[in-house]
Length: 453
Image 1 (cartoon, one colour):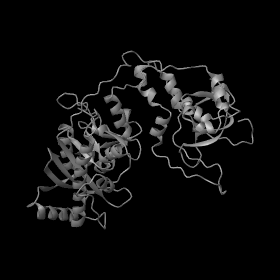
Image 2 (cartoon, rainbow, N blue to C red):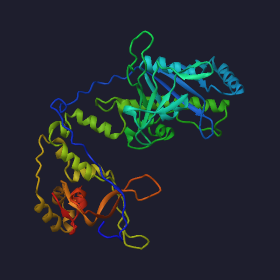
Image 3 (cartoon, helix red, strand yellow):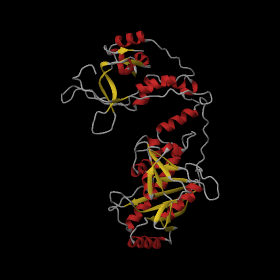
Image 4 (cartoon, rainbow, N blue to C red):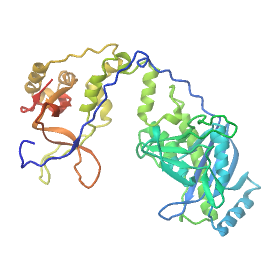
């Protein structure tokens, strides 16, 4: 900082690797046609209302080719005898009209292994990481691909008085991306006694309906709101009291499973309307669907078309700052204009004609045009910003030495949290190594900016 009186702030900058890509790496990756399994195991759990929210009981349905083949209640290992008897009585009273059964938690885990692991069927739930964690007997930090997440031990055996992990069955690794998405998969196991490798047959087909609903609507949903959005006939019901087993509470849980199963069918039906090669269990966001459409259109990534374009993508990554809202005048009445921006990313993409870069067979980079950029930035007026021909000239990147200029930065504006937020601040640089990449729209016509490129 040039002045000792000016407060400093830690801020973050996006970085990028300059890796070498071989011709083999630059080829397009073939996407296999996804064939959805015929069956799905749908389940939901109810928990105690303590801080840990441990398992109380739950229900599952196994549905294949649109038919309900099996339904059962399962309960926690330490459930009180009185509550177990209530569940037995509930099942006995309804067995004449349904195939309802009652099994233990470990009995349900055997169903998961038979259907979802060996049978490679869909394992379906709404907010799957939560429900899976209720079934686990232990947890640990995940490794490798799921590093930063957690690993759940579902299958175990009893040795003496201790419960130990079954080394011949996989664990379930979970890594959250955000509040709507998580990567979920089976992990590797030891060799089985026969000597055959038990490297997981596959990572599993985990279908979290919360994630799929987000991918199809670009909105975060609860089970109730998702059922309403997709016209589920028997949607989520309500109950007045949680955490205590009663006939009403069991009915509530079974209805949740029924609603989840119907929602799964509705979401998959909607998903199938998109003629794309995308596995529905890997539709993590609307962007996943969008990229699948690009592949369907035969549009490859820029690096697949231009193997030498990597550093320029790095500049773009460094210069990108997401949506931000700043108020530079606070607690002072001023005239304002209410403006409602809808779908900003596609809007900016259209106005700046960025689609040209997506479909271009070749992109020519004009480098070392410092004088032209300076003349443009210092020459336009506020009126020019309303002209489409001005917008097209903002498609580029500049590396600058800021000198107190007001620029977007990503910093820790709240020292009490670990959040890195985007805001507009005065920015300084002393050495050439401190120079940063920005897009021309962020730089504006700052007179004190010292451009390097």
